[in-house]
Amino acid sequence: MLEPMKTYNTAVEATLEVIGGKWKPVILFHLTFGKKRNGEFMSLMPAITQKVLTQQLRELERDEVVKRTSYNTVPPKVEYELTDYGWSLKEILHLMCRWGDTHVERKYGDQAVILSEVQTAKETGL
Image (tube, rainbow, N blue to C red):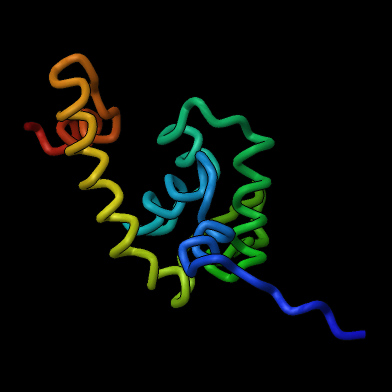
């Protein structure tokens, strides 16, 4: 049986269907810097719950933007990385990050902090 034709009001709606929500863009952004394991995600995003992280990663895997690799080791090792299709989102994710930097500065000035930038500064010694 044929499924009904999918209709979108704009292509933005189709994009948000895949990467929309609070956590998916953040997960994808972190993956633009390389493979990540579950524990790394939890460190990078301390406010996310394990249940939500797992759900979001499964949905991104289902949409073929994230690849899950499970290694047959003890203890089990699982890594997540962007697929070739997922890498096509890199530019938009980094543009969202730059826009967010500008927005935070404009709206809050020095009354807000972006934790990923603090962590990067610590790692680079700045």
